[in-house]
Image 1 (spheres, rainbow, N blue to C red):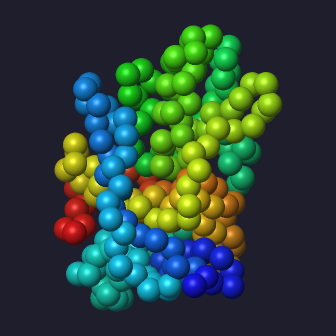
Image 2 (cartoon, rainbow, N blue to C red):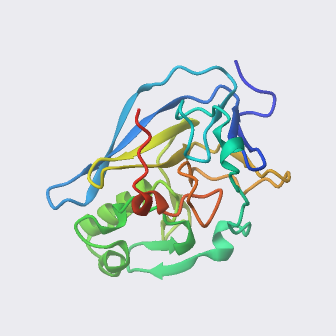
Image 3 (tube, rainbow, N blue to C red):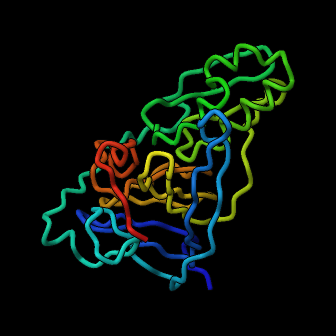
Length: 230
């Protein structure tokens, strides 16, 4: 069953995310490599949902990840402050000999794939080496927030993993916290005032309620020690 608008997340004012379009929901766990830096995602089994469901945005629900109305008693302030500029209008270009990478620092959700083995911003300088090019491309593509995008220098096209529309509940066992909502596969996100954010292959939304860049995750779950208890 599909929604007439396709997969969509509607942000309710000072309330939850209303998800429609039968979007699959599952845990997605950050897996560290030998040096402790994240190198892979482990995906859990789908969590049963209806074609339409609401996800907690304030971090206080007793029925996480779903909304139970706790935002009302908590007086949750869900004011959206994230930039509405298109990605490329915000991006800084990192040029390398074999690969270009764009970076929007304000999208960072502290998933840390960018520091595996070596940092993206240092690695791009050495992309005359095919192995480094492959590694940097993978680092960029695994960033759940879409902060980094790797670009083919010849065609000017972005490298992206192919995702079906889905939402991942990020778990970060290395830090002992639960992260944001990893929205994948071009799911439309609509503001509480009707503005439709630029549709992207990778977006990370806040679910701890503490982000200073709502509706986007800014890594505040790391400082607050947010755990969803699932």
